[in-house]
Image 1: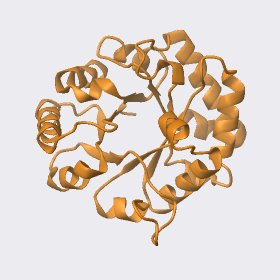
Image 2: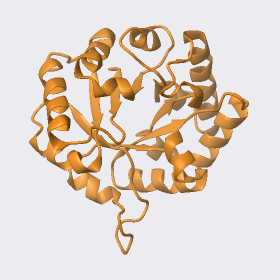
Image 3: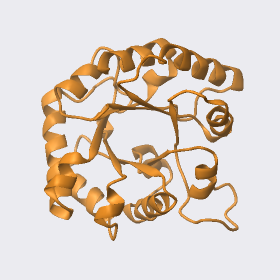
Length: 246
């Protein structure tokens, strides 16, 4: 299974030129990274343009989606719009969406269902605050987020474990902590579905990932890849992350 490295640019960069330069630099220096699957998730304003001009093996993802197929939902983007824009992945359940936009597990569940029905791959983010009980939080997020989603559907799902206290803080989760969290997630998935499905599911780590610690998460902590935030806004740093895990 190739490591999956996802770049979440969030609300960056601020100009088209900056975004295009970043995209072209990443594209140029990852051409030989055949042992890694790379997914870029730029803002919607750059996404369609980059995905259509892309002729490399790099894939594209969206940072958000709405759960309705079409209609009077000003400002929203449907999964089918993303599908026609050559998008393969969609980030859903990110802690910033939960915090700033009040997204509940029920809303996230609706989004995951819509993403799967459109033939796209959800990157389902989960994670706890520093003062929360990890097991109970992850169990609730996973159980409610995957409610009424079948075994066949969930095969296309990717889980991204991002402890909230580690996102953008520089306080990355230790390898041992991450390993135990990955095992816990697989146990929860096994209880909901099957052990085989749990063992084969791609689980990523995210939270203050950089080129110095990236390889450890993939090679030592039992993850199947990384969800990279701030470090993905610097082409050289992101390329070094990709190189380190390939």
